[in-house]
Image 1 (tube, one colour):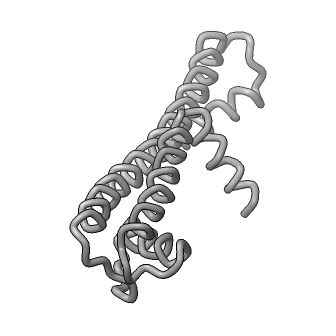
Image 2: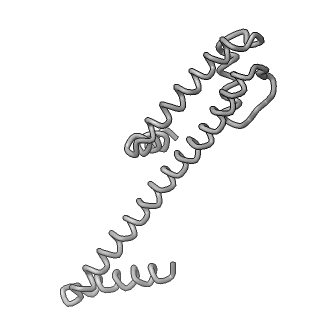
Image 3: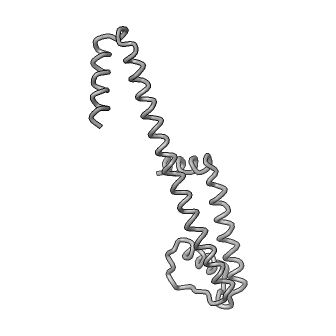
Length: 140
């Protein structure tokens, strides 16, 4: 599990998505602070963070609600921004893996092409292996 988590963070850092996620975290914490200060029924900053998390994740348990106009506007902005962040992060990760698979496929085809160009230099066993690899690629 840790290996997959490290790979995910590597992808996020390499693609610059960490800045988007950092700005999202900053917006979430700032939104929680403003809501905590603006809402009389919000007793702790932790409660405001919990509220912002439920808004951002679109869970919306309803155990903590806001009534003021400012807090509602912030909730709307936070919910829209969180949807975009989730979409961007998902797209970046999917695109990374798609490109990785395409590169692997191209490398494999390049190796087969190279062997085909040098058929006369291959041994009988190498020819059998090449034939099996081509059949395998054709059956996919």
